[in-house]
Image 1 (cartoon, rainbow, N blue to C red):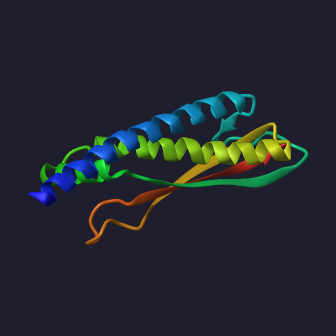
Image 2 (image 1 turned 180 degrees about the vertical axis):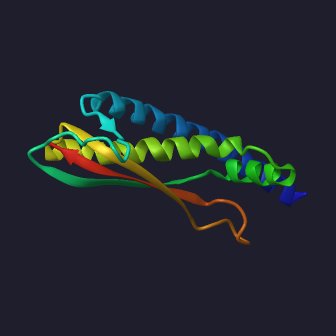
Length: 147
């Protein structure tokens, strides 16, 4: 019985604290996105000409985002029946947006007027005990800043 109570408490804390921190992170991301709108992020195809610039440098933004206990529990339930794991979609979204923002902020501090050929990479970092589930994801964004 105590195990069940402990599980319910962990799920509740994971849900409420995780939701609060996720909401706070989204607010910060939106604020920083508005501040960096003046520097476009562009991806070109293989046969398109890259804009001319006097100087160019490679910039990288990387972030590791962890899922809360509630999301890990909900995803393990979803694994029983298959389908979309919706609870992790916000983790991936926050990771992508944060990595791009960090890359843009580096480029802006260097003086870039735009960032071209942006690419994203993702990978999992660690796992829950027993090797099941996702503990965290790493998202890396990189591109060439031009000024």
